[in-house]
Image (tube, rainbow, N blue to C red; front, side, top):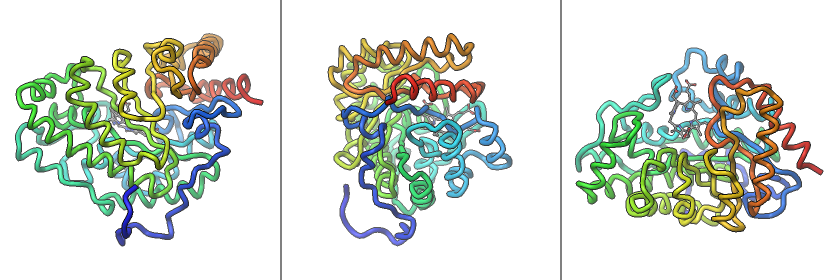
Length: 359
Ligand code: CP3
């Protein structure tokens, strides 16, 4: 990690020792060591599926919530209290660092991130200045509060990968085919690499801030990388994701996840991330055959949570069975919790994974 004096805005009182918490099954599995049970957490475990989340969020926009340390702390803890998951995931959003450097971006309910002036030109690339830790002092503060509250439960920090962030900036919002982004890559590779390398610096710094404040692992979300062919992924996305992940190399375990990225498993692993997140479209034993010995995270289909309990637990068992082929297995969904999910069903999965794999 970067040495040197801490900026004044990073308050020493909220800082905690980011030393590895070795008793954690989650951290053991991340490092490829045999955990005492298969650890489990869920992407988007904090959020609209929880009534206590909806109550806490009343009257506050998503980005305002992300900038309010006490609220971030409360919302991050909610699923840990309710489910006894093996890790907490920091409540924030992939666009928080972009808003923090002054990009006019909003998270529109039911839509996703929307950018007021989409990025098209060199002068747009110049709008992506470096992130200063002081721009996100609320993240440092919330992380410090959380690591105290969480005790031995590790906190996962995260960032969006450059390709996924660039897609929001270039398209102006969510997109099905990422056509403008892919057209810009091909017609203006110089401009593409300028935008993506600035995003890599921003998301690398965002990860570093979270780790310095006490996060014990990070996840890089490249949710939309599945839209790229392997050749395009290698040319346009891989170098920038690798650069972003480098910022916390040797500091904490790094998880790398994408959706519909079965064809990119090997290429994404070349970023150097310790753990590969696998979406629900590829069985874990197939992923393990392609990434021998690698810690794998995943990959219950999020819609399985909406099925009846017997079907849900049968599918959970199937994921556990296939996961035994992996170096180590961290149980998760194959994408985020759907808003309509019944929290009792998620609780059933956590209890079941712990019961059947625990001592
Ligand atoms: O996982 C967690 O519990 C931590 C919090 C988290 C959020 N966003 C909170 C959130 C994480 C890890 C993210 C990452 C994120 N954000 C990704 C990558 C993961 C993925 O799902 O692929 C992406 C693509 C985004 C962008 C984004 N932000 C979308 C598509 C949306 C949904 C918009 C909607 O209303 O349907 C958001 C908003 C958002 N981020 C919500 C939450 C809890 C919902 C906002 C609300 O409660 O109103």
